[in-house]
Image (cartoon, rainbow, N blue to C red; front, side):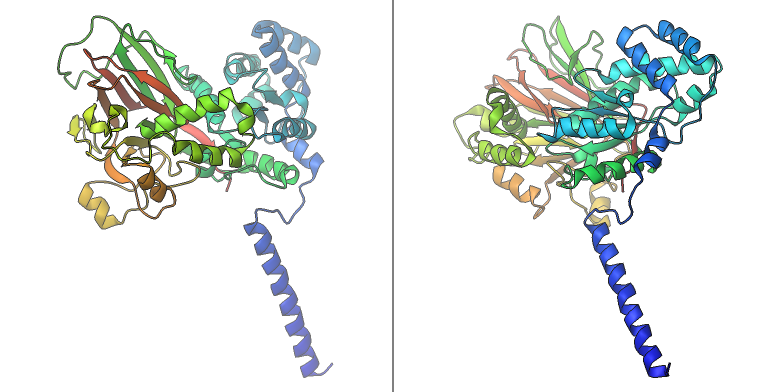
Amino acid sequence: MDSSTASTSEESAGKIVASRSSAIQSSRVCGLSVFRINKEDLRRKLSIPKYLRHAIRDSIKSKDVNAAVDRCREGSGGGREAEPDGPLVVFVNSRSGGRHGPELKERLQQLMGEEQVFDLSDVNPREFVDYGLVCLEKLADLGDYCAKDTRDMLRIMVAGGDGTVGWVLGSLTELHTQDRKPVPPVAVIPLGTGNDLSRSFGWGGSFPFAWKSAVKKSLLKAITGPVCHLDSWHLLVSMPSGKVLDPPHSLKPTEECSLDQGLTIEGELPEKVNCYEGVFYNYFSIGMDARVAYGFHHLRNEKPNLAQGPLSNKLIYSGYSCTQGWFVTPCTSDPSLRGLKNILRMHVKKVNCTEWEQIPVPKSVRAIVALNLHNYGSGRNPWGSPKRQYLEKKGFVEAHVDDGLLEIFGLKHGWHASFVMVELISAKHIAQATAIRLEVRSGEWKDTYMQMDGEPWKQPMSKEYSTFVEIKRVPFQSLMVNGQ
């Protein structure tokens, strides 16, 4: 072969290699895997030994851990099966994801086995923590090394929206309070509308079109991906007794109702108060955005056929917001459509500061949001990416999901919010805080609206006494699996 022919062959080979590389890169960008994941190999990595799966199932079903442990030891004869490589359990919200929820549940059961896939309509995550994990811990204490390895390496995957993920994370906080370590990290299959938690940790913003092949890839990432930390925030609402509150699922009544004593409360306090508490991972908000979310939430409950999936939800939400006064001028006869400055007093603890500081509420702001993640409203970043000079001037620091800080910003009206959401402008920056105290005064307002992590409620107000909302960081962090 002469040199010209050899050169031509090398150039052709180079083009083929380049073409293949380009195709591989394109497929990666599109989220497709260029290698096939063997179903049996994946099942072997994920599977918890059969006798342990049955013990977990029996513990949850009977609510009797000791009996399940005894049956397990008798059935296994004290033997030990092969240790799992990456033990995983999945919680599926089969009502999420439109028509895909039940199909996904069936697919997961085929890949992993029925006992490792829990439908949240049948088993809630708190039952898994109180009975399933306790069963593994008791077997480990009795010398079952396979149960110990399974408990130590266990990871959890949640197929659902942000509310479902928060429900599971909240249930796992009991492991922190009871010092039952390690706490399993959580991975996500996004089935909700916004999926901001999922976006923040690399699991995407929507259920993939080619979901049957994507499920195997997601399961593999769930057991191999790196673990990240996530701040969570405790919210306490203290309101005068006598007012009736219909709280969302994330807000529970509590007898413990002690506000931070480091901040003196001005004015007279009621003799009796009702208190509610909850935990959020993404955001808390008060004002018009919560009012729109509250109305849409009830509209969807009254007419469930209106919204059958994420896209239709977003379209209907956008149209509904136009009917609620979000886009009209705040100079209106309806007091509840005016700025929050009329009813709200805000104190915060800033970065590296233990003292409370009052922050003026901007006159034009009609919604205030305290944000923990970079993603809000289906992947938007209303805080933006401020330059270092601006951060230094304002006394801010770069925002992270595990920095112990909430970014507080305001939205003026629907048009302002729309421009913020398409990231043409940033929201109105108010403060960064390690703790927040909101005092809500009634005046001409009968009630206001609040929400946390997409669960809104109508907050009744008293003319005589203030309602307080206090937000503090939970002293331990949640663990998330990074899906990127």
